[in-house]
Image 1: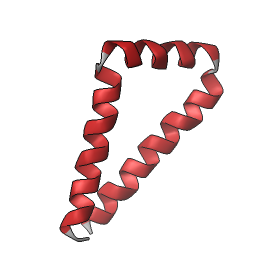
Image 2: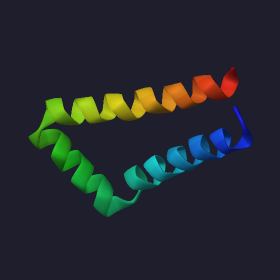
Image 3: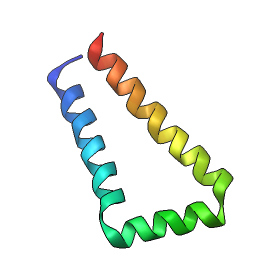
Length: 60
């Protein structure tokens, strides 16, 4: 994978971490998880699987 793949992976990781660290968005994320746990479970799984695919492509 080219250097752009690494930039994309690190950028997405920073974006997701920033989203979860910033208190207002963290509160919204936790509230949504409490209200609709199954849908948020799918969202979390989609994010983690996408990050895993980017990482696997970067390592190969």
